[in-house]
Image (cartoon, rainbow, N blue to C red; front, side, top):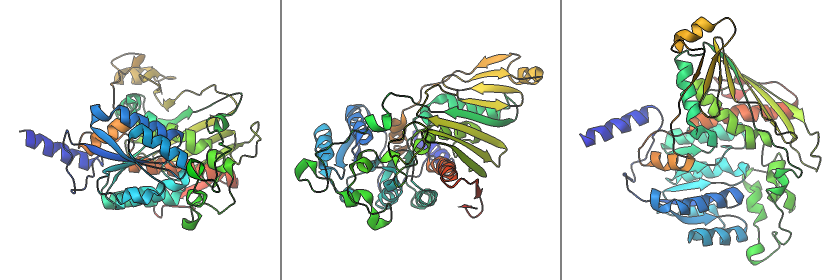
Amino acid sequence: MADDLTRRAFVAAAATGALALSTDRAYGANGRIRMAVIGCGGMGTGHVGSLVKRAEKDNVQVVGVCDVYQKRIERAKKIASAEGYSDYRKILDRKDVDAVLIATPDHWHGKITIEAMEAGKNVYCEKPMTHTVEQAIAVRDAARRLKKILQVGPNATASDGYWQASEAIKAGRIGKVTWAQGSYNRNARDCLFNTHQKIDPTAGPDKAGEDHIDWDMWLGHKYGLAPKIDWNPEHFFRFRKYWPYNGGVATDLLYHKLAPLLIALAGPNGAYPSRVTGSGGLYVEKDGRDIPDVFMMTADYPQEFSVFLVSTLTNDTQIPDRIYGKHGTMEIGGEPLLKFNGDFKPEFQAKNDGKDEVKIPIKPRADMVGNFLDVIRGNGQLNCNVELGTATMVAIKLAVESYRQRKVMNWDAKTEKVV
């Protein structure tokens, strides 16, 4: 009976795209998962510490850490008691590494993710999944081909409210959905894109020991990932402000918003847009950065809904996550709250037990890394799989390009190219 349940769970997971384990290793419920972290800046080091804390409970071990900055390697080694590397390929060569967590700057995400899957590793990749649309499609196709588990890291996809919203929408509880909104705004006296990424004046490519940075490797110019330029500590420590490595608030913040909204609107695999626009400007934070401090995007989808998102660094008043249907409106951000709208009270009540207003209970879900480990062991489905990660990436990146080029960007679903 237990074997039959396991088999059925495996088949169901595979059918939903939740599970794609290769057969070179069976983990089982209690098998130890050996992980390496590639990219040990602020986010990566946080992941190292978190993995160490959950080592006993989740039977996971950090066996390798990697960065181009020697000081970060030494710091992560001490936290995890793991081997340290300055070249990620040495981690991928290790046969005892089951999975890698990638927390490098965005322009490296796609290349390392594909090479890790080709080396037989399962991958947790921080958001955004890639830096370009082309890289996103390549990562998706590689994941499909190689049958590896790839989790992308927008945290809100672990919030049950969006999954409950998806079920409510499919059940017609607010009528035909036509649009949704969300925001991720910040406002600080000193911009967090500066204060969160402090420059170390003692570090650089010409320094020795722990102060050494492999600048050429970080740029990735040999692989066409970014232009070759002289050492620039602003670019290295504050890469989120510059187009060659990042998409600014769109890829750093709005990726967190669009991915979970797409779960609610279109299901666990998301949906690709048909038309995207991006607007805004650099109005306050004029410190030499490329990225805007006010950014707005609208994405239209062939499933007949639109999404409007805002991210600013100039005012932190938020637009609530809200989904608009013909019969009712749904607010998310905890338990979804449904209310009737306009003249459609009878239709709303018919789908909501005769009530004018309904709250949907939510259940605890595993956090992003915990969910990743569960799926490796054959349990459940990913919070943000490669299909959702790619669909989100396409819309976000088209919005960035729309802003930069001052054009409406149209997506051809058949050729999977911008037209």
